[in-house]
Image (cartoon, rainbow, N blue to C red):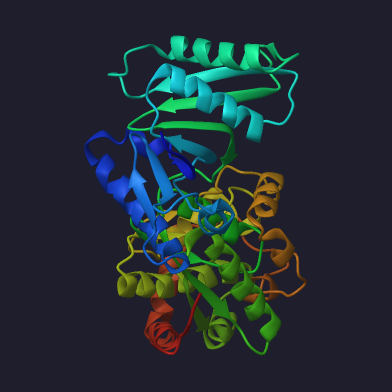
Length: 394
């Protein structure tokens, strides 16, 4: 019998996809292969293994510490297991492999239990019988150790699939759906806490993200732009790639500042941003916009304000944070790694043009009527800003 170190990759939600499960599985497995293809010369392979992915080196033990950092944050994966793969099938052989694995990788625990999953239903004995046999072998071979089925110090997992795998702990993955399997969306990305978290959550549900940032020199410094670029770079840890669109927004802001009432300015600025974002959506074949609004957080995020902003879009607007409070958002930002970037003291274009007393219950039709009088001058500015946008690939 042969044994070697491998990496088992667990995925959760996509296993429930029934008729289109294969599409999600192949989407995820291809992304894993792409992320590690430069680390080997053909010896490492990624395979489907009855509800798991298996990463192994055909020549022997897998260098898991080399592989894991590349895929640890990948959406769609619920966990990783440092495992031993064996060709052994007879129960007496599995007992020997289990004992050897326990001695090498489980330290010196006081108590233990065995958990067996028998995905191969043709295996001749039950999961309970496998656990009992391997547990008895360990119990009688290691002096002083105890069996504890409720709160053991160590749980040894045995999975019987096409091959048999032994492992102890699982490293938690990000979960969600494989990135890009749910379509494309344009993320309105600013330097605050909210929009990066919103982009992360949308990406976690499988939406491929195209971020757009509205820059307003000389009212904001280049540090503000660098801050947003760093946020996009951090999100890439989860998405793998990202193409940031940077739009110069100064001319549009000055025009709207001069042509609209101060208390309504924020609404018109957001509507202009949405119009430009829709142009990017058309260019990238995206089906939605993604924004970081949370209901009632500020004046421009009341239900009435959101409705007045929505009517500028010709595609749906997703707001993953709509029911979250600020502390929830900040906690998520810390987890994602965007908090320390967002907290940098560089204002973006939105915060500098906020009125002292912005209107918080605008009437959508009234806003549309005012904008209709401005559109002949506003639309050329919007098209110009979009055509002159710059792009940065991460």
